[in-house]
Image (cartoon, one colour):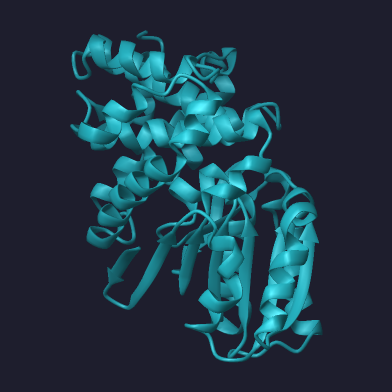
Length: 353
């Protein structure tokens, strides 16, 4: 169990195999009787919605469900409106709650729904994808996309509880599991030490599943410590965006052909190649990073990196401060740093590899 203590909120992240069999009891320990909206997507709902609903109803909760399409296109205004309308139509009050049963997309959408409805109702994350379990369920970021801009409409809204059960991962398609592993590699590069050494031993999807509990715990511990020091990304929380500046841009330009983690994998390599040439990152780190990604089948290159539209996307990056991007470099594992780079210099910088 990991406790996240913030100025205005303290909550627990519980991580264990078999935890999904205790959902009713876990939630009853922190929430009084109330109406609950479970938000999920079609794939996760097929596997886990019935058992989750049954557990909650067994301990006395009144449960409404909302099953949405999977994929990044669900993080948009029409689905946010649908979720809020569902709450209103079922007469939810400020004493009720929303549960996200799913991965990063559902977690982001459900969190923003809870934050906006009646100016904020209770929220819990049941993270079912590796991306959500190691990254997006932790830290309170909620957002949707608008047009061709990713995560542009959102807020920081912390959950009351995060439950993470690695056994959910057994029903993920191989591609979905592996794309989530990109976030583990990212975190290991930032953390260095034991976690970096562990990712160096992962050679396959089977290795990811076998080591899932340890990978998740160590990733969450690192992120939770960062969030406790910098809840709203004023300083060191920016480190967690390693690979994401370029990754987010090409993810949108790929129009669904790249998963989030795949785009981040490409983004980490692209930015590190440029920083190696600038004598900021070491060539050994780049080689080791590349090996950790390719050995499990993650992509490390895309023609979209050189697409002129990619640079245009950076204008909308949330780390754009008055025309200056806050790029994340890693000198060697465990040594991240922020490199300010003017947007006007990005074209030359991106041609540098």
